[in-house]
Image 1 (cartoon, helix red, strand yellow):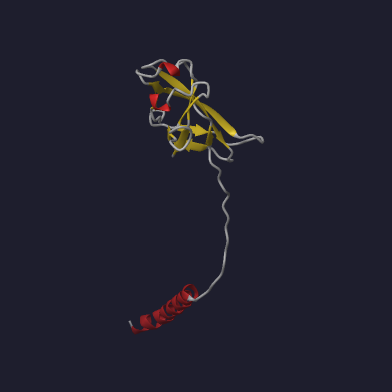
Image 2 (spheres, rainbow, N blue to C red):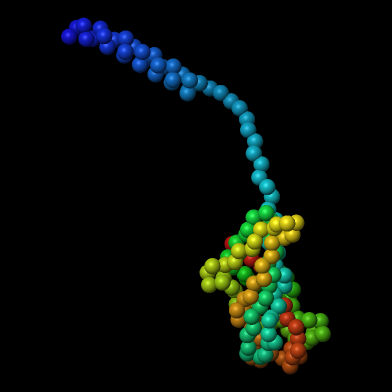
Length: 161
């Protein structure tokens, strides 16, 4: 048995030395630098939404809006909400009907059934575009003033992810 110990000693010594070298290699201090860049993204823009049908007191209309994407990748829009910072609280009434208050309009936030919309990437030198029809998105109050007859309306929207 003693001879067997002497045969194992070189093998054990080699393993200890190799472990020490590996430990020194991986725990040695060092330094360096690196850099990376990212592209910039631009916002998707929305045209003012326009009713696809005439609005009557107590009625609703679909709204059509165009989303434009200048990025080289598709962009997902989860929700289209009223933008209260644009127009008159998010609405627009044509200049020929100044006595028609925007307060007679109501916009229903849209999600496309929870699926949202995908705006295609820009390609071939042009921006990606998609026309979006928002079902029953705009309504006119039942007590809308006579001054609103024949008015053209717009809805200013903002996308959220």
